[in-house]
Image (cartoon, rainbow over the protein chains, first blue to last red):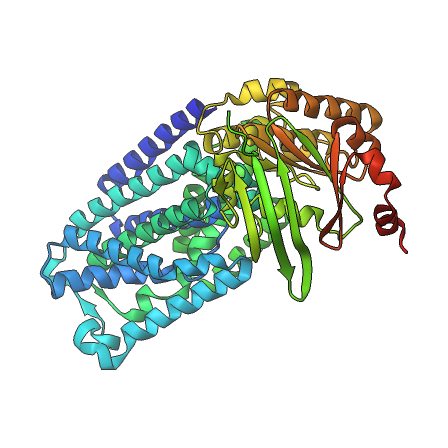
Amino acid sequence: MRNTRALQGGALLALLALGFGVSPLLYGNQSLLFSMMAYVALAQGLNVAYGFTGYLPFGYVGFFGAGAYGTALAITALHWPPVAAVLGGGVLAMVFGVVLAPLLRLSGAYFSIANLAASQALYYVVANPDLAGITRGPYGIKLTSVFAPNLSYAVLWVILLLATGAAIYLRTSRLGLALRATNQDPVSAAAAGVDPVRGRLVAWLLSALIAGLVGGAYGWHVSVFYPQSVFTLRISIFAIVFVLFGGAGTVIGPVIGAVLLYGLYDAIGISSPEYFQLVYGILIIALVLFLPDGLASLARRRVRDVL
Amino acid sequence: MSSEPLLEVSRVVKRFGGMRALDGVSLELNAGEVLGLVGPNGSGKTTLINVISGVHRPEQGTVRFRGREVAGMAAHRLARLGVNRTFQVPRPFKEMSVRDNVRVAAIFGSGGRLDPDAVLERTGLAALAAREAGALNTGQQKQLDLARALATDPGLLLVDEIGAGLNPEELHAMAERLLALREEGIALLVVEHLLDFLNHIAPRVIVLSAGREIFQGSLADAAQDEQVVEAFIGG
């Protein structure tokens, strides 16, 4: 079973590497490919937290924004090279994850709402005009001096593969088994010798790191951004919907969800937002009614062990 | 060989708000011994199991296992030390296979010393290994609870009403299984309302009432004790 999953994991990684590696050569809209890749990685990062521990972070965008701003500050204030700055952005998001770790004592909606509030608090700190000397407040960030769309695309490509690799690890490793057990029944898991705090903390920080890295690569790629564009709740909602649509707790689900739904958003979401909202709404209702475990559950009916 | 008991509970007090669920309970248990724990509903039996297994921290008193103070220790650390339990209402990982349920405990509880397949064989669950745990009936889920606890290689097993909901045939098999564990040197603290079942496996019982010990001795003697009769039937 473990071998089947490792094999599926290798195939998925190869497919993603090839798909997002070669498509810029065949398709000119790099911006679409970049955004899609960012959402696949973000969905996978959210899946690491939600799919494996059951904690649904409505404020997931907070880590993305922390990564974007961390990267920007490392470039503008510390004069770090952009790739190192993206890493720094990821670490800053992880530090934000450490600060929010006590929220893991909460459960269900209480956790989700508290996390949402924390991300909004961070947004207001960053956007505060009084802190414009550090964050440039509402006036936004400019990184045009290091603008490098191809290199930032390549960095995000690596981040995507790492995020997918992390999810494969959790799906196939002993740590993943411990997380699944804790998610299903923390009291029984402790009786089985599983430390319920350690596994959740590892997954939570890994999830924060992934969002921070994606945010950092995004900030560098677009090179001009504002607080409201990297802390918008829409980023959290998209990532959550993509994960649920594809199938939380699987590796392949968030990839399918993000590619299909972001593709749909790009096709009609900008040109005809009203139809997009309608189609999205219908899709979500249909999913909740007929496929509550996401599209990956369709595959599970045929192949018992889906990655 | 040390003469120290495997488990030594001394004057344990546990309160929930203003209520004293345990009010100075003490007991000793040696390796390979079976001790029954009986009492009316609300007398503190499950609370005592929860205190020994690390679910609750007592306000007063000590709990020593193999000579080490373990009161208030986290449940996962106690499981690794050799203290484990089954639950009154079985709590399997429902969306995992029977084998994975036992595998989790073998990996994290016994540090990989025990082979999950051997544990499944020993507990009569080998044929159900690939089944999803949530699809098992109550009797099978109780067996799985026991198998998962055994996979952590316990020295002390706390058994909470394992007989409830089992048919006579399953009850008999469970009693034999628990006696076999005793023969292997595992100490058993058994909470049970089915007195025939308990009488078959436990030569000594402690009777609790309102969080206090009111009797210690054989079950047959307990049935003749005025205080015990009063606690069960009412004054």
